Image 1: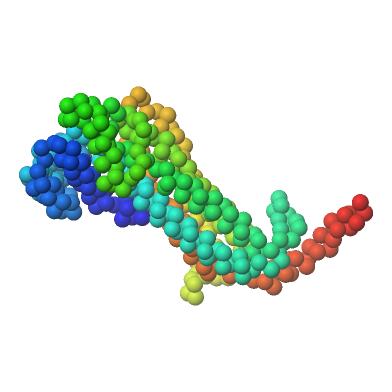
Image 2: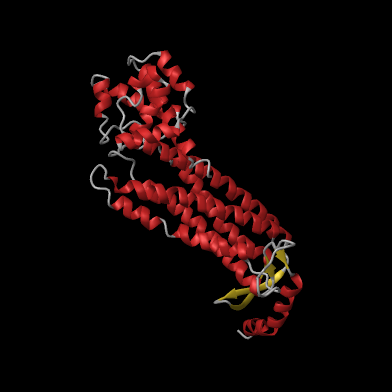
Length: 365
């Protein structure tokens, strides 16, 4: 996940987008040479970050800083890099590409988590345990059945992630206010060519869907939807780990505890569920993010305002990075979770006389 949101990924994707745009513009008749395209291809990963930073400081503009850094190493291509585009062409499209790759990674880790939990559920499907409502002893369930509650939540999250992946649109080639006006100028008012340009660029970048209409940016509701999915995963993880923390207090279940692990610096007997507590801590943060995305979308005036930029650079990467850690922890916890069946049985037997009252009442109907 760190690689997906790294500067290297971001800025090489900018260059790939500039190459895709130039290649599509050439295919549709603009005066762009193979030599220019080849220079761009040869230097996709040849980024002088220090030079780009110098240019950005000079121009006070991150995109133009990288246009000039790219042009320094692909000199013949300099006149056609970013031709007709606005900053959001590389900025927004890169964000969408990063979101897509990050969702794919989250999806695979959800599958991994579900697979491990399935083994635990099947292994303990016939182990009776106290059910709890209001955190008071209730009808019996089984250890495996309780695990399926956690799995069901995560399966719902998997379905939401899959939906977002299948329906995530690229911003595409939209121009400065979503009218494609600059591209219409480049192609002498030929609307069909401009529409084809958008299709070609999106296809070259691996997308078969794009936003139908936009202002300067794609609708920030997309960010809200994505962060809501991440929030859902965090909710599921919090629920699961909250249950494990309570069961650890009852000494029925224990998360992995390493041979040399120290539970407390003062109380050597303690076996604190620190992994589950870490999950809950991170999950609380992720669950706080959707309102920021909602407010960002609501405050986008007309075609775009720049107050969306700084906050998105925080909440999108950090949301995904936190969920990545959460899922890694869930895999670790589920894979090493220990059940103490004798303790479980003891608690069941302590409550059986009271549970019998429900059967008696049913017989007295």
